Amino acid sequence: MSSLYPDRSSTEPRNEFPEPYEYHYEYNEEHVPLSSRRAQQRPHRQQRRLRRRRKTIVMALALALFAAVVVFAVSFVSPFFASGEDPLADYPGPGTGSVTVDVEQGAATITIAQNLVDSGVVATTGAFMSALRADDSGNLIQPGTYEMKEEMSSEDAVAALLNTDETAVHYAAVNQGLRQSEVFQILSDSSGVPLEDFEELAEDPTQFGIPKQAPNLEGYLSPGQFRFPLDANAAEIVQILVDKTFANLEKAGVEGADKQYRILTIASIIEAEGSPEDYPEIAGAIDNRLNDPISEIGRFIQSDATVTYGLGRKSYELTAEEKNDTSNPYNTYANPGLPIGPIGSPLLPAIKAAADPQDNPYYYWVTVNLDTGETLYAERHAEHVANVNQYQQWCSDNPGRCQ
Image 1 (cartoon, rainbow, N blue to C red):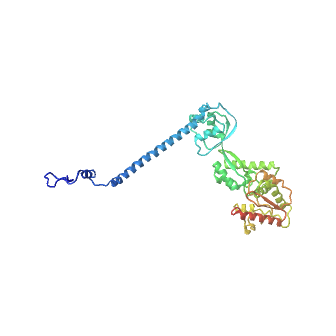
Image 2: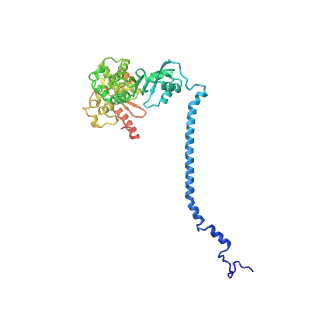
Image 3: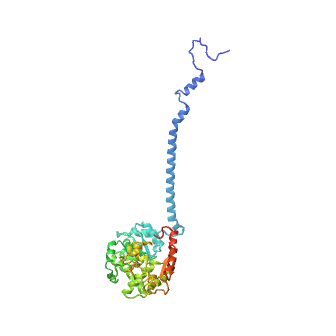
C-alpha cells in the first residue's frame, strides 16, 4: 500500500508539504486575509463613487442651465415667429391719445421696453432696444412717470424718454387720513426735494393763500395722485396740493378764507371720526354741539382724534389727565368749540358734509367695531354710555386693537 508521504530514507530532496499546500502558500504569500484587502480597497472605491457623483451633479446642473436658456429663448422669440410677427416690427408713429408710463428706480432696459409694449406705446421690444442702441445723445432713461402716446415709433419713444424736460414727471400718491408730516415725507421721497424745504414752507402758510390764523399747512395738503415736473421745487409742489383743496372747497360751495378754514377744520374731524357713510350723521352731531348745545355737554366736541393729534400720536386710548389738559390747543374735551386748526386734509365728501350738516337729533357718536366701522348715535349721555360699553366689549374681545 503506497504511502501519502515520500520515503524519509530517500536521498532525494524532501518536499515538506504536498502540492496543494504549496499552491495555497504561494497564493497568499504575504499572509494578508482576503477581508483585510477588501477593507483597504473600500476607501478608493468610495472616492471613485464620489467623483462619479460629482460629475453627475455638474452635468445635471449644466443641462438644467442649458434647458433654461433654451426655454427663455424659445418663449421670447417663438411668439413672433409663431404669429408671423417681425420681432423688430415698429409703428410708423407719431402716435395718438395719451398713456402714462412709469419707470421704476433701477429698472432694467428690457423691463422698460416690455412695459412700453404692454402699454401700447411701441410695437416690439426688439424695435425699441434697437432704437435705444442707435441713440448717441449719451442720456440715460431716468426714473419717473412719462406722458406718452399710443403706437409711437420706437425712435420717438426713445426720444420722449430721454428728453425728460417735456415728458418725465415725479409721481406721488398721498393717501387719505395722513397728517402734514406724513405728506411731506411722501412728497420728499417722490420728488427728491429735501424734507426740510417742505417743513420750512409750513412755517408761513399765508404764501399759499391760507388764513394767517393757520398754524401750518395742515388741512390744505389734499390727498390724491399727483405728478410734478422734474424740476419742481417744494413751493411749486405744495401749491399743487393746496390748489386741489381750494378746488374742492369751491365744489362744496364754500367761499371766503375764514369760512373755508372753519369748514376744513370740521371736515378733518368728521373724516377722522368715521367712515364716509357716517359723515352726514357725525357732521350733524358736531353742528348740534357747536350751535345748539345741551347742558350736559356744552360746546365741547369731545373728539379723541383731536386730542391725539395735539399729542403727536395716533391712538384710541386717552388718559383722564390727557383729556383735562387745557394746554393742548387741539383738546376738544378741555377746550370748547373747534380746535385751533384742521387735524388732517379732508377730501370732498367730508368737506360737503361739514358745509351742509345733516339735520338730526344726535349729540353723541361712537364707533363700536373698528373692523367694520359700525357707528352708533345717541341723543343723551345715558344712551351713549350703553353704546360705549359695546365698544369696550369689542375691545375686550379683540385684544390690542383699541390701543
